[in-house]
Image 1 (cartoon, rainbow, N blue to C red):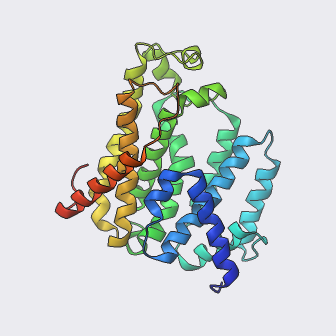
Image 2: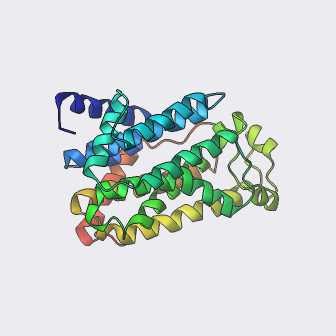
Length: 290
């Protein structure tokens, strides 16, 4: 597909969606100096956001089914006349994207729509791999085309870790919608009840439950940082900032005494600036630990 004026407008719409719907994600990736990389990330984000909205906010999956069929059409080089499909088709034309990763993501959205109660840590990680680890794997061929195979697991770690943090900071909001992603067996172990979440109670065992999930994200953050040197220089900043932002969210929740019920924890501009400065310090001495 040629780089036409319409295609530029399509990508611009995708970038606006990313900027509006995820300030942290946008801040981490919008500074990519390679225009094609930046726009490709935005197109992938827009695709994922639209799929998530359709599975999350619709009473049935009719529109999601149509969305999935549109994806099939795009793969057959017959994209629906819509900005997201034209942009995503261009991404597939210029990067070694794996179709199976996208289908796994769509499968994960269907599972999420069914609101299946997660019972174990393994089920939680499997869910995160489907709905978010796949997103990280989508980004790797764009951010590191020469090392995409080697960094595939790193991409998955990025998506899973960010999803785990989002689950923790959205516990209160999800409980209001009768969504509980904390493993049932762990809630039993730490004597945390669904009613406690709905009543916005930080009960005695809640902190231990929170930390058991948080450490799963933090282990992945450390693995990601060890692999950063394998990414091209112009992609490293986005990866590191994503990690730093989400590590800071966990710390902010701890500073609020684990209160994820009163309000959704968001990083302030000063906190984001602090993380950006930390990024530059890390790169001045080589990325080792954050």
